[in-house]
Image 1 (cartoon, helix red, strand yellow):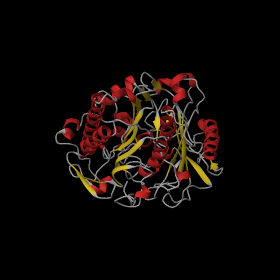
Image 2 (cartoon, helix red, strand yellow; image 1 turned 120 degrees about the vertical axis):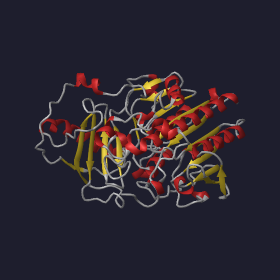
Image 3 (cartoon, helix red, strand yellow; image 1 turned 60 degrees about the vertical axis):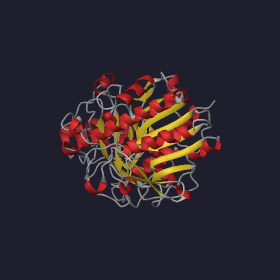
Image 4 (spheres, one colour; image 1 turned 135 degrees about the vertical axis):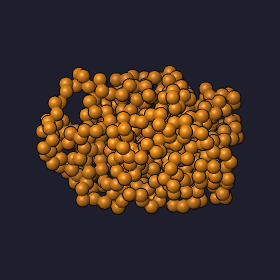
Length: 456
């Protein structure tokens, strides 16, 4: 019997907001299931990240390299693959891959059941959730927004409990409410977390976290409570042991510390997201220590369900890493940045290396032929990416090796072979390149511990 599959997607959730204090249900799911110690989005902005999660293909391959571009109808999504295998397929919440609301039927990625909005932050607020059904009619979902979507997910599971189902549950939380640039949490939740904790990168760099983090964490707390209710519902319907549940986010948030908004940068605050799975094939799997990408989630889910992984998918299943931590796997994760700039980068356990096309327009240009090194971070000694080593003579050799690796990954992703120019030599104080044998000391523990049109 093939397992049911539920993907739970949050919006703009930092990787470091997971743990017993904020997300006990997700923490428990990660502890007894499988968690990725380092998971990165392939693109730190909504539509591109979502296109990769649906197709297992890079945003520059699908053409959805920025917001405001419709997912091409010829792209095959998880809904197509699971649907062809006899699964009921449903989508709930935020889509952000269509042209308008209500989303036309031919722009819904092949999902058969639909209760969603293209840009949910534009059709709803915290206590007024408007989605559109299969017929394109508006549907008001009562309650706090994330609770309302959990209620809808539980109804979907109950209605399809006698057949295999694939459900994609997509929240807007903990994204800000655009028109007020605020994070509306349920009553009392913002007060609970305001001033309680500040991530080290935000403490060092400032930004808007001092006034937004309470609401942001309050939203995450309510999301976790909703996850607990969904798992309880699966248990009560005797479906929990037969259902894979995957939890992740489209990208993180740096709270206006790296540019003038919340993401679209090369830093872990923008790129790194939580990723945990439970259910058949994942229970007792422990932690995946090697860096992975959320573009790897679609092939992983298909393989876990016993379905073939299409050759056109550019992600790769990380199930082999659950069986053998030494399995063949890339040492780096490749990522792209659009809209704010045309950027490309890789992240290894130790290094972050990033280049930018200085003459390209991040809104109009999908890629570029020429780039220049912009950032190099040693994550062993500088896990919060506060000291940019690009251009230092002490790190020229390391940068050269990373430059070659990035170029290879760009070509493998379907891009033309780039010209990457070294960073302009810096007059900053040279740094000592530490011996790699001591690099693990600075890494985090394995445990989870300009606005453009078309939304954000």
